[in-house]
Image 1 (tube, one colour):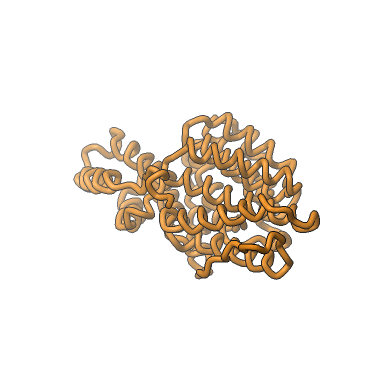
Image 2 (cartoon, rainbow, N blue to C red; image 1 turned 60 degrees about the horizontal axis):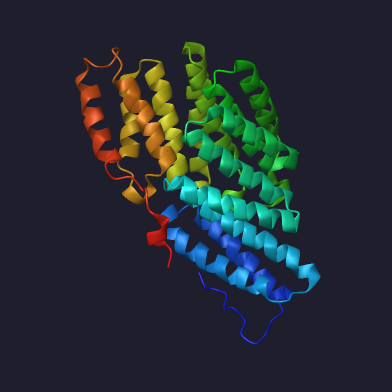
Length: 327
C-alpha cells in the first residue's frame, strides 16, 4: 500500500488528499481481517503520525472534522491491535486518544467502535461486569446497523460470563434483530464493520457460558453458522475470526461430551501461525484446556495428546511489546 506523503510547504489539505487518506484507512481496515495484527502496526502507526502532522497545520474548518475522524480510526486500530497482542495498557492509551478525536469529529460510529474495543479489553482481562457496562454505554452511539450488532453481541457475551441470563437474552434479541436485517447501511470497511458471522460466534460464547446441555446445543448451532458465514466470503475469511469460531464450536462439542468432534476443530486451530495467535484466540484455547483437564476427560489418551499440543501452541503466542514494533 502506498503511503501518503506529508505535504511540505503546503499547509492545507484539499479534498483529493482527504479522499486519498480515507482510502488508505479503509484499506488498512480491510487488511486487518486478512493479515496478522503485528504486520499492520507499523503501517497504521506511520499513517497516524502523518494525519496528526496535518492536523497540527492550519486547515479549513470543513476538513478538520474528517481529519480528526481518520486520526481517531487509526488510533482505534492501534488500540485493537494492542489488545490482540496482549498489551492492554497500550490499548487503553490509544482508545483515550481515539475518543478525543471522535469527540472533536463528533463521530458516533467511531465512538461505538472504541467502546467495543474497551469492552473487549475488559472482557479478556476478566472484568466481565465492566465489559458489559462499557458495551451497554456504547449502544447510545449505535442505533442500527453493524455498530449496534457489535455492541449488543459484546454485551450479551459479557453478561453471560456474569451468569445474568435475563440480560443475555435481552442483548441477544437486539443482536438477532440486526442479524436478520441488512447491516450494510453504515458503509464501514473491513474491521470497522461487524459481520453476522462474527456476531454468531459471540452468541455461541454467550450460550456456552450460561451452561447446560440445551445451551451447549445452541452454542454449537451458532458456531457452525459462524463458520459457514465467515468462510463463504473471502474478504471476511480472517484467520483469527475463523479460528475463534472453530474454538467456540470445539468448546461446544466438549460441553456436549463429544471429544472426537472437539479434537477435529481444535487441531485445525493449533496449526495457526504464531503471529495469528492473538490474546482472544489463546484465551479460547485455554478454555478448551481447562475442560480437557476435567474428570470427564482426564482418562482419555486423546485428551492428554490434545493438552500436550495446546501447551506447545500457548508457548508461542502473538504477544508483543509494541514499543519494539513501532518504528
